[in-house]
Length: 74
Image 1 (tube, rainbow, N blue to C red):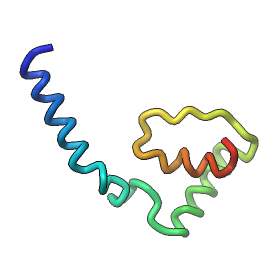
Image 2: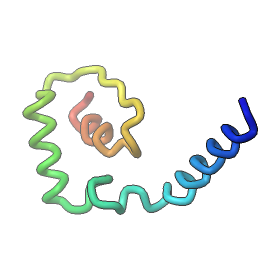
Image 3: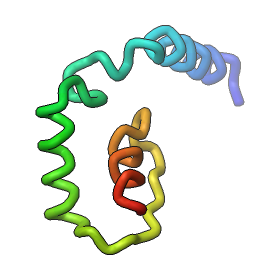
């Protein structure tokens, strides 16, 4: 890999490391209220159902949806 490509990768890594701690506080990231949690739960129940499934969570941010699905045994 070229020196320039390594520099770009390092800049990207630095950017994500700098924002990781507050990532879920941004709008659209994470769950910020009980009302929002209930809305997500309703969507997931309607979409996935209650039957236990094996679900692979890959590249979906901090995993707040995976945590909700786990509450239902997925």
